[in-house]
Amino acid sequence: MKPPMDAAEITRLQNRLAARDPGEFHFPEIYGAGWDTLYIGDKVSIGRHFLQAVRAGYFPTVEDTGKKRGGGRVYRRL
Image (cartoon, rainbow, N blue to C red; front, side):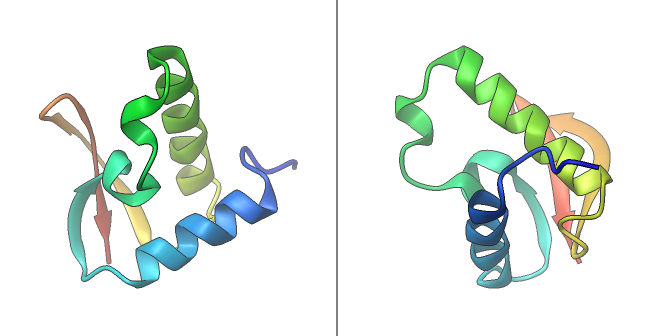
């Protein structure tokens, strides 16, 4: 199965996640600088790809809580 994100982006996000303490978060916190400058359609697409990557096991320390709060999906770093 082709990953929903390229390997470089998966590695970048894995490194950002590794630097975080366990707990809940929204994806823009992990994406980092530049999120606010993206077009809304790009944000939706990138966010969907992250969710697909989480569900596919590319981020084994992250789970989708199934909740939305504050305008976005809530994830949990284990």
